[in-house]
Image 1: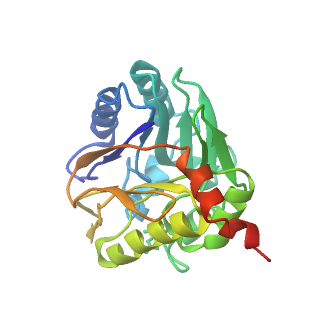
Image 2: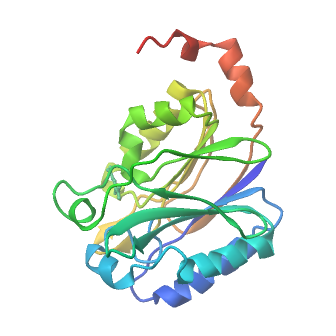
Length: 257
Ligand SMILES: O=C(O)CCC(=O)C(=O)O
């Protein structure tokens, strides 16, 4: 299975519309991949809190339209990262959109753990409630977003629901980059899954981003890791390795709690 993680910079000098067009073109360039993954809140930037309300979209808004088309033109499964979603009652959510290779939306995930410690996203956005898995022909995806990575119980829930590949879009800051790579590996090892974690590059809202999108196998080996700048990280992996790892080292069977 081939996956491409598109790590872009959210540059305030680029309009949201041009970034959408640029992202769509990058997705189209990944034709031939099975799965393409984009970062968290790449239209606004995950730390651009003051932009959330102004840039929030309905679920089937402009990002949905452009990404559905890009997925079908590239013929790929697309985790289109997340958007600031505005529901009909005015509530905002940090919502991920997933599309099939025919451009049909197959899942949405509203981020459960909101970041900000009583500020920013934590007060501006509503809390998601539902765990989401998506069956692809080769593997079952379990989805989570950025700060969720710190909460292992969420991933146990996804594993119980059948997840074999965790897909985690993020806008992770540079100053905690070590946590990002450490936690990505920890979630892979403890759950015996692949982890595909896609972050952003550059600096937005004065917060330098970590980049370093990463793909980890169920044994905790790093299959690929991006640098700090814009990059498309492409990796081939064998989803069958999840079953093999769980059989050879059946730690998940010894869970007590
Ligand atoms: O947990 C962290 O260090 C970063 C989380 C974050 O930036 C986010 O969820 O947007």
